[in-house]
Length: 356
Image 1 (tube, rainbow, N blue to C red):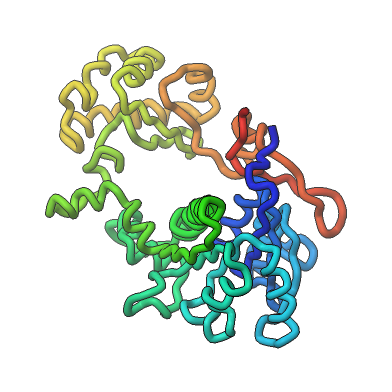
Image 2 (tube, rainbow, N blue to C red):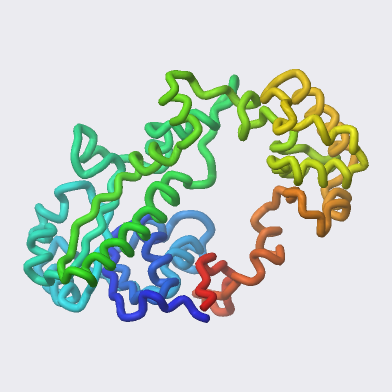
């Protein structure tokens, strides 16, 4: 069954870059009609990463299934067309700094006068209020202020930003899509639209669960290699193979650990698990991790994938994206987009699937 849960909903997307457009991409995947309104010259993301003709692959992915139009909201003509579109819309997504829409004469009170059921989702870096409300920021800033980035810093040597925009995706896109659906539900029930602020930094902070728990307990979060999920256990770790690839082992529950030990022919390790009393980050944990490290390093990744094929013990290869697109899990979600220069682009649909 196609995901048409939001059929009949019209979304005007004023946002730019990644968080807002990714949020409305999810809404489009659920059946909403999304009109992406870009300024003259287009969205900045048109020039990010590999190019497909005059625009980037990233721009094409983020705007798949949307209508893209150009409007200059700084001019009377552009505002007039936007207002006409507002009358038939259900939701507006925006990511300007707080106050920008108000100064343009398009703040929420004005929008509600034009369309009482209209919902407005404002994506902000640091919240709509507070001393940093109008400050600029990007993914790395939100991760830095929410404690996430500290978890990835090396003990020595230079630190490099991640090429995965966790702040934009989790703090921004997914949270904004969730807020949008909640606002639309409220409007359907009450007949009244709402203005919802999604602070990316605040969402990230509240989602940084284990470090937050340690802070609540008045203790610093353990360094990497010393906690339950950051390398302190041999049953939940990354191991390098002979060909310098990696295996992800997540036998966190004893039943999976037992099956893993049986599969590698090491039943003697079955009782050396944290549920059997092994100290997290302790001497025995390091010893078992060392043994497994030497074992995995003795064979290439392909060998281990044959060993664990069909074995339900939470062992997976660490794949590159070109390999991900060939994997059976991704294959069921693959689709294609038209390429600017002809032909098609292989891409991935949202993992949200309506089953009945």
